[in-house]
Structures are given as C-alpha cells and as structure tokens.
Length: 290
Image (tube, rainbow, N blue to C red):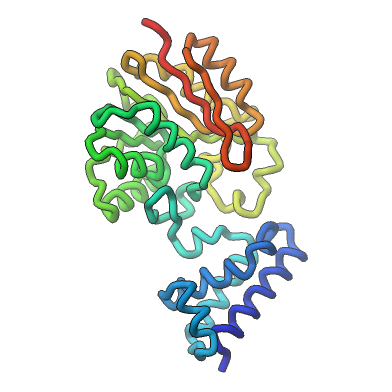
C-alpha cells in the first residue's frame, strides 16, 4: 500500500511530466510538489504540515483513487482553486466555481487602494462585476459600516458571491443582478471599484491553461480589451458623489489608454499603481468637478 510520501512524490512527478509534454499544463512544473501537497491535503482534510509530518502513513485505496483523479485534472491545466473549490483572498477563504474568475493576488492591491482612498468609517460603495464577491467582501471585512453594493450580470456568479457572504458572516453586502451601471439608476457612491474584463479577444493569453477554464465573459469584453473599461469610465461620473473615487484593475499594457479615457472625461488625480511584480495594474481617479 502506498504511503502519503510515496503518493506525493508520484503525483509531483506526474505534474512535472505533464507540464513538459503538454502546453495545456504549462505552469504546473514549478509548483508540482506544492500542488500535490495541497490536493492531498484537500482529499484527507488535513494541513500540509500534517501530511509532511506523517508521510510514512499508508494511504487508503479510495483516498488514493480520489487523489489520482484530482491530479489528472490538475495535469490538464485546470486551476487548483476550481479543483478544491476554495481560494484565499485578502484575509478571507472564498468558495470559487467555474462560474467566476479565480481571485488573484494583484487584485488585493485594488482593495488596498480603496481602503486608503476612503478612510471614512461610513461610505456608499459599489463593486461592479463582483464575480466571487472577493473585492466587496474584502472591503466589508475591513469596513463593517460601509454600505456596499455588488453587481454582476451573471446569476451563477451572484450565487457564488452570496454564498461567500453568508459563509463569512458578511450578509450586509447587497447583491444586485445587472450589467455595470444598469441596475444603479439614480444612485451615487463615494467609491466605485471594479476588476472588469480587460483582455483583448485576440490576445494569446486567453489560450493559457488556467484562463481556458475561466469564464470568457469575465476575461474579455471585446476586440481591444478596453470595452468594459470604457463603459465604466464613461458612466462613473454620473454615479459618484462629490469627490468620489473610481478604482479599476486593468492589463499591464493598458495604463496609458485608461489614463487618456479618464482625462477625457474630466477626472482628476489620475494615478496608476504597480502590483508586486512591478506591473502597472490599478488606476484610480477622482470624480470631475461639478
């Protein structure tokens, strides 16, 4: 009977081989051992530390079969978060499904900027295109008195976000179905936050193994990748309170185009911030003067 240690070694080897032989598994080689540990920890409902401390313990056949099936999915390039159904973001543990994007570390910078720009204990805030609810729920966890609305055009995505809010005890966030500003007629906010789709339809990045599994509508909004960003910038002023802020995530090659769109709409204090990789990722701007 295979031990935990043997199963981990075999699984890591399989992931490395898949990464070397198949572009669909690209990116798994460097993280093969970690991915194997995380997946077996998921199967056994244990921590990684517990696995490594008990690597000589035998693995039951049914556990081994389940583990092998998960490793096969990962070898085909499926994101780890979709396999386990969980993803850490900010200080939260979120449920994720293929109906939503996998929350990424660079989006935490957007949360940081929102908190820095609006330090008030009370504020009206909206997260447009909320997906898993990552941004809205991270903000709610830090500012419990903020009145936060989160929108998405996807019923399936909203179901995931609402389930996360319930599980995290952040039920005060209001979830609304609709496309961008459509369900917000007559409403104004101190802060508008969004991580919209910004990849161009022809971008080769869409063939990346992880992105192939994620909802295309949440990744790409049209031929240039600027379509959703343009909609957000064009409609934001009508939904921002005096001195309100718009904070958006965008592609590393888009900061200048985004800044030009904002300046053309009369926005002030247009600033772009780099993520941990040094890539320009988050742009903020203040509502134009009345």
